[in-house]
Image (cartoon, rainbow, N blue to C red; front, side):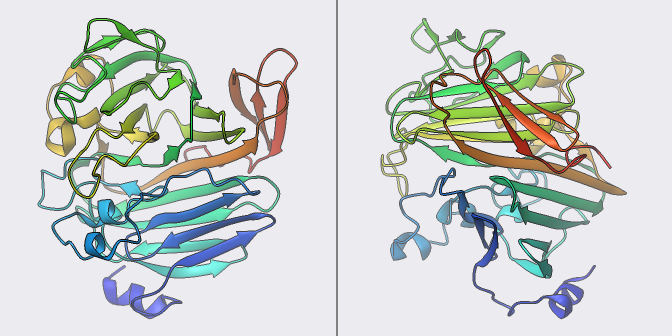
Length: 367
């Protein structure tokens, strides 16, 4: 579909305001100027982060800052993920930095189209806020194009105080070969390990990634690789002060890695200015960690570990992703599993502890 086709079918004005969708007690707001989630309310829980500079005119007017960072919020789709260094473009690609048009809209749901191609591919986004459960469903349809590309979702969770991190079994954890902010990294550079609770630290000790935050005044990045053969990968953050559980689900075959961005006052320059605190990016996708698009096309520690780092464009590729949140049940201190069976999603805590939610059967399948 061409840009003019999108414009003809769009249900909003050429420069539309935010798009808000509601269902039951849930609501999502999307900023159509770049396609990110500006706000998400799941039964009274606001699970996603918003940068502290969103309402500062001087930041919003600074075109030297990529749009995705000026409007840093919620979740966005990156294609390519990270460094956009094969074709000229902004960090995380045009999917996270340019307008989307509304193609169709119904009760609690909408289909959006990216207003420009990416490596020749057309990208559509289907968003649905559930009315019967605290769940946001997203599905990206990537059609045509050519070449190899990285991609990832980029949801961010903020927490007021200490929190706990849980995830599906991983076969290896890989820290950034080059720290995001050299000298401000808590994790040792270029390390790999198997134990989430004992990751090599920059000071020679170890860091427990299951307890947040993992340090002060730091920026860190680590890639978690799913166990072979898993169909569904999951991540959950138990936020102590908020007294809730935020969770994400992915198709593990399509998205074999979950990349964690630990951001806690480790950047002193504008617009960060040491005030971006207690944020965890949970970035499910297919990429070579922090190495950028060009790095994902080359041999790396990721490819040596047998990790698929790129997606081959052409035909139609569907990327499903789920965000959810529930109040923490009384007495819960851990999440041991999240599983889907038919039209039910089960979150398991300790022995005898389960929460069961309605779920769209087959949503995470590759169709």
